[in-house]
Image 1: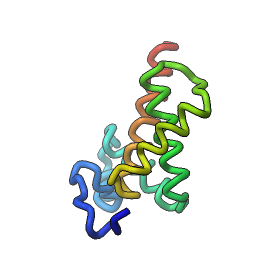
Image 2 (image 1 turned 90 degrees about the vertical axis):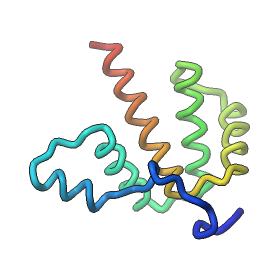
Image 3 (image 1 turned 60 degrees about the vertical axis):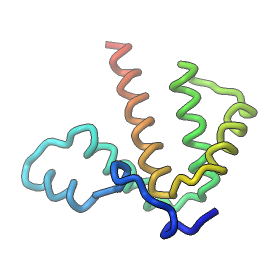
Image 4 (image 1 turned 45 degrees about the vertical axis):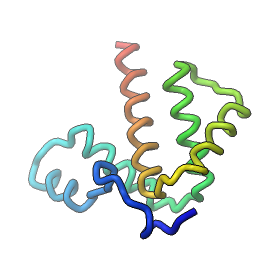
Length: 113
C-alpha cells in the first residue's frame, strides 16, 4: 500500500470537522454532510485498524446492496479483501463508513414511520 501522502485524496471525502463545528456553534443545524463529518471524526478518533475499517465498510455496503440485516461472514470477508486492495485512504474509509451507516439508519427509520 502507498503511504497516505502519496495517494491522491478525493476532496469530497475530506473531513472538515473544524469547519462543521464552527457552523453548528453559530446556530446552523447540521445537514447530512455535517452529520457524516461528525461521525467520521469520531470514528477517526477510535484509531481502528485499516483492516477493521475495511470489514465494517464491506458489511455496510453488503447490507445496503442486499437489503438484509445479517450478511454471511464469508461474503463480508470477500468484500473486505477487495477494499483492502483498493487505494482508499484511512480517512476516506471513515467517511464512507459514516455515510453508509447514517443512510442505512435513515432508511430504517423512514421504513418504520
